[in-house]
Image 1 (cartoon, rainbow, N blue to C red):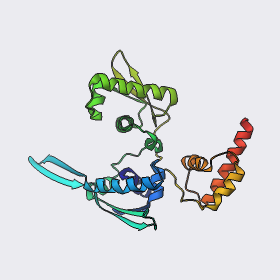
Image 2 (image 1 turned 90 degrees about the horizontal axis):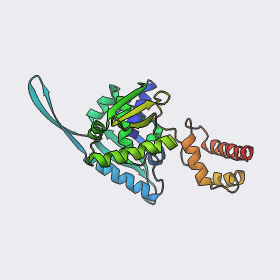
Image 3 (image 1 turned 180 degrees about the vertical axis):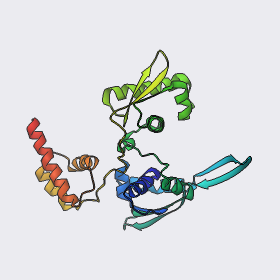
Image 4 (image 1 turned 45 degrees about the vertical axis):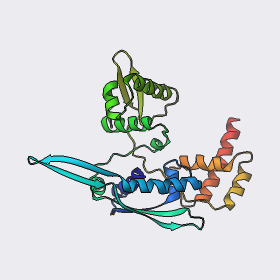
Length: 267
């Protein structure tokens, strides 16, 4: 959620717009962009995440001018559900970021992430991507020892178990290219992990989103793509979106037409 809020402000900054510590967004858009469940349970999890985020605090002791300064602060100052549906689902959410987070954004000290970051299901995969994004960046390659990678990940596993987990990720990436931005390989002889930039880091957060579609459009979609689950097609369409459409219903139906045409051409 914090990444989503930051991405909204970074996009606005890159477009030369004024930004504020207060971020307002539609709950549905946030759930879609972060690849979360949009059913009732998804909204409940979102509300629980707001409570956890509001309760998270960071403490630091920084030495400046020979003096140690202790400081503690939160990631957000407040969160509010601005609007809810009759059945209690949140529609609009407003979050006020802390001064520390907002200053980092305004100074452009925040890294952008690939949209497929949210499709990584394993926490270790996400952490490894974050480390690669920070250290490899736009370089062609970055190498790190397995032991140091474990330390950077903050893993409490034994080195043997950590190696097994990483090797599984390496194997899956070799077979499916599922890691965003960087391919990952393992040199068993030197116990080194190598991250190779695929085609240059791209700024793709936030993912383009579209509002909830009118109920009538699904009937038309069923006629355009007979035999297909229209909700599956909608998920495919939303993950494909290159930009937010002006007319979501028309854009979705156009996607359904092309979907069927591609099936006919390849059939």
